[in-house]
Amino acid sequence: MPINRSNFAQMYVNDSQCKWTVVAASKAIYCRVNGRLFRREPRPDWRLDLSRVGAIDETKGDFIGRYARRDATSAVAEIA
Image 1 (cartoon, one colour):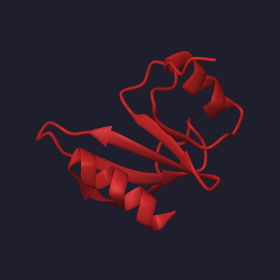
Image 2 (image 1 turned 120 degrees about the horizontal axis):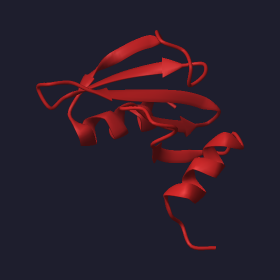
Image 3 (image 1 turned 90 degrees about the vertical axis):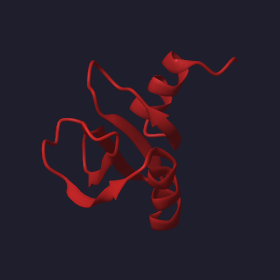
């Protein structure tokens, strides 16, 4: 099965580990690593706010930090 956006979204819904994925019509991007759900949200200054959340519909999560794009991925890998 080829990997595309809809496959990643389905993996996310099935609680599988997956890389950064757009789920629903949100500006936020989600990632699940080792059963933990992370959300990164874009800011006007081209940086990303990284938070750990329990579910997609959670409006406020545990704020981890503000990162550049590749730094956010590295932070998730180290935290998880």
